[in-house]
Amino acid sequence: MPGLVDAHCHPGIGVAGPVTLDEAAAQAETDRDAGTLLIRDCGVPIDIRPLQDRVDLPRIIRSGQHIALPKRYIPKLGIDLDHPDQLPEAVAEQAAVGDGWVKLVGDWIDRGVGDLAPLWPDDILAEAIRVAHDAGARVTAHVFGEDALPGLIAAGIDCIEHGTGLDADLLDRMARQGTALVPTLINIENFPGIATRPPSTRPTRPTCGRCTRGSAT
Picture 1 (cartoon, rainbow, N blue to C red):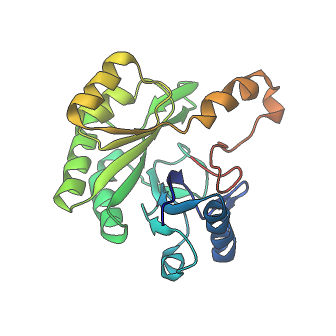
Picture 2: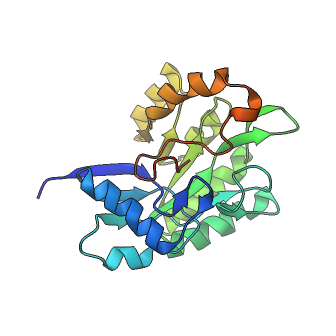
């Protein structure tokens, strides 16, 4: 039976953070009812493997948990490493429990900089991606800004999520080396409205996931 692929989804994240397994199932049902038969999970904080056993839900390819650093991602959604040097080990662990994908947080607000900034040194990224490839897994990264993209692409990352900071030269390099892009274009529609709101009314969590109606990252 033909169906849609939801290439960026978080069945297990709601507007307030982690949800129950029953709520995650309801999110997957919403995606199914829209015509989706395959969900690519891009990082969730709960174990959704039981959903893979349900024949009434779309097939789910899991990525495990987001890998981040303290105060450099949404609280309670990812694994916060104590130091960037721990990234290769964490990638190996997530590669072992996922379905062939590992999700990194490539950039997030750095309070010391006051803007989006990369989380990982280029050499650590390259080692971590090599570790994933040696384990038979691929690596993708959440990236909204510009500064993290060159290092991620040079390190051999397999996919970029969002990618709103990409330019023509980086897109050309991605095409030449086979790096995929999942653009989540709803962000382009949402960002101008968010930017014009008073700071106190802006969402504290990104809102780009269709299947969760406000999950996602």
